[in-house]
Length: 164
View 1 (tube, rainbow, N blue to C red):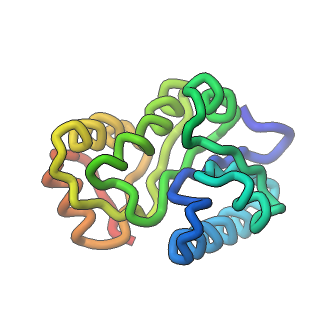
View 2 (cartoon, rainbow, N blue to C red):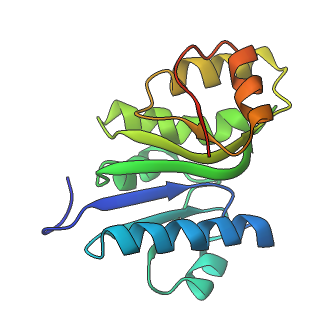
């Protein structure tokens, strides 16, 4: 899957939205990935790829909002792993938008990890179902706080959830 000796790591979250907190989480995550695996190739899935390319010229940036499944699948197929998070992204009406890409990655055999994800409110049954069915198959699920863990448990996610 990866190119050359390194691994290709995809990162999906609320990036490119110009939210200082989300961008700080991305910076910390990239520092950690690149510190642990200097040979890693990082692909950031961004809401505003032009903005993200401007602030992150050291990584590959691809758009995912308003992009067809076929187009995002081209990028997802190249990954060795997809990291979902961090930040508050698993909530009513938004969760399924992110999890659509996660499901697609899983369909290509790409392991998915959540990283310091925030969850809630999560009362919409469609979103709760997407969370249950998609994250059950994640390699690991980590959340940013106890409240998010409780929200995922109340949505019916029956698997280990780690609070970071």
